[in-house]
Length: 161
Image 1 (tube, rainbow, N blue to C red):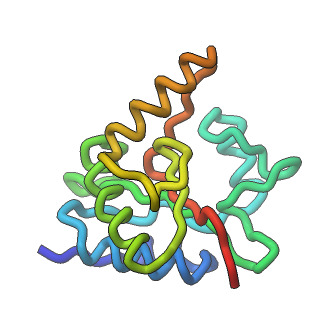
Image 2: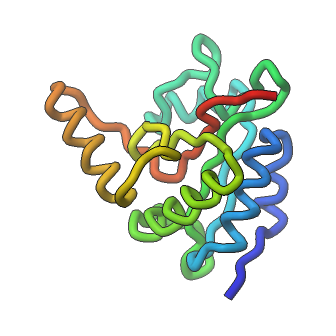
Image 3: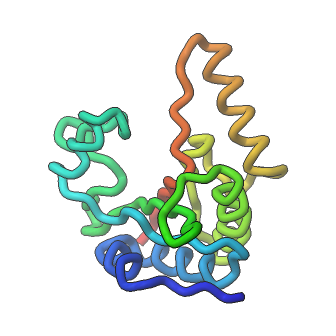
């Protein structure tokens, strides 16, 4: 089965960098798991609301998030969330599958991506997304810090226009 973005996902892709847009479309067309674009471009107020809820570490005013408009006029991040049983669900098993497909498409399209599941540039990584997350959590805990896993979050690692 081939999945397609609905009107909400299309709307969320408005204003994001063309490389991210192209990668998202390539990923949905190849994914065995349905998903949508839950969040694309954000205003500073939207980013700050997430920060106040503890859903982001970036406040949107003192620090500008990748979901916000960057110097080139585009947002540099999207949140891809599995669509399961007719609603968005933060399901790690599905996120791992989406990330595997996105990893392949990012390499094919030469779109450099940093994934919020492990906060690393994933293009050169080998192995599985599960292992990347486990390594990230281990690294944070061994440093006495808390891991902030954001599995749906994908951002441009490096942009050249």
